[in-house]
Image 1 (spheres, rainbow, N blue to C red):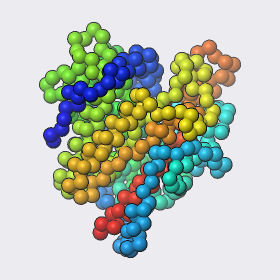
Image 2 (image 1 turned 90 degrees about the vertical axis):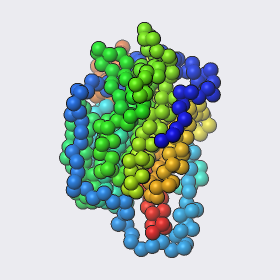
Image 3 (image 1 turned 135 degrees about the horizontal axis):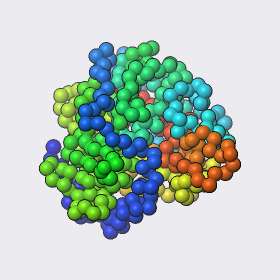
Length: 437
C-alpha cells in the first residue's frame, strides 16, 4: 500500500536522535538481553503451529442473538471510556488466582513461589478517571471467544499477558495444552474444550521478518517490509490477534528494506547509517498492520486486532544488585510523568493503530484498537519479579550479586489489569457487532 517512508521524516528532534544511543549504550545490551531470550532459530522453522481445522472461524458471539433495542444502541455510544488515565487504588479483594491455582505461570514470573516476602503489590486495582473498570469475569470472556482462535503475537511481554489471561480463565475452565514447539515453548496453543476456543502464542519479537542475533552475529537483522510468516501464515485461522513488541528494538540491529540496507542501530564497526529505533518501531508496526488489512480485510474476512502499547521498565540501579527495582508501592497519580522514550514509543503505536483503522474502515468488521497500558505500567514499579525471578535469591543471606527482572510482571500482578481492559474492549466490540446486524 502507498505509505510514507518514515526514514525520510526530518521532524525528529535532536533529543530523539540522541536518545536511542544513550539508552542502548547504558541499558539494553547489558540488561534486556537477559530477559528477552536471545536465541538462534534453525533455518527451518520448528516453530509452526499446527493448523486447527476443527476451529470454527466466526466473529459473532453466541451471547445473544436478539437485536439491540434503540435504548441499547444509545447506551453503546455512551459507554466510551479512556482506560489509560486513572490511578491505582487499594483493593482488599486481591487477585482472582494464585501460584497454586494456576499451573501455567512461567518460573521467572512466579514471585510468590519464589519467596517474595511482601504481598501488598497484589492488592491494588486500576480506577479510570472517567468510568468504572469491572473485575475480570472469566465466564464472560470464554463466552465471547466461543468457537474462536485468539493469537498473542510478539515478544516475551506478549507471553506475559497471555499467561496472565490463562490463569484468569483457569478459574472457570481448565486450559489444555495441545501444542508446543521451539526452545522455551515459544510457539504454544491451549484449548478450552468447554467453549471450543483456542489461545495461541507466537514468538515474533519484531513482528516483521527477522533473524535474531547469535554468537556469530552480534546484531539482529530486520526486514522491515516483510511480515514474519511464522505467525502471519496462520492469519486465516485467527479471529483475534493481540500484538505486543518493542523491547527487542532497543538491541543492536541492521535494518533491510527490499534489497537495500537502510541503516542500523548501535552497530560500531559497520559502515551503516545510524537510524535509531523509533522509526523502526513505526515501520515494523505499519508493515504488520497493513499486512493484516490487506490479507483479511480485502477478502471481507472478519478479524480483530489489539495492539498492547509499550510498557516501561523500572530499573533504578544495577541489574545484578538486590535493589534494582526495590519499590513496594505504586506511584501516586502525578508523582511520575510519562515522558521520554516510553512516551514516544506509545505515541507511535497509537498513531499507527489510528492510521490502520482508517484504512480498515473500508472493509466492514475489521476492528483495530490500541490497548493503551503504558501509563498504567509506568505507575507500578512494585509489580516486577526483581530478584525473585529466581527461587529464594537470599536464602543464604544477601548475595553480592543477584540477577533482577524489572521488565516483566509478577503473576498474579498488575498485568492482570491489561486483560480486564481487554475484556471490556471485547464486550464493546460485541455490542457494536449486534447493533450493526
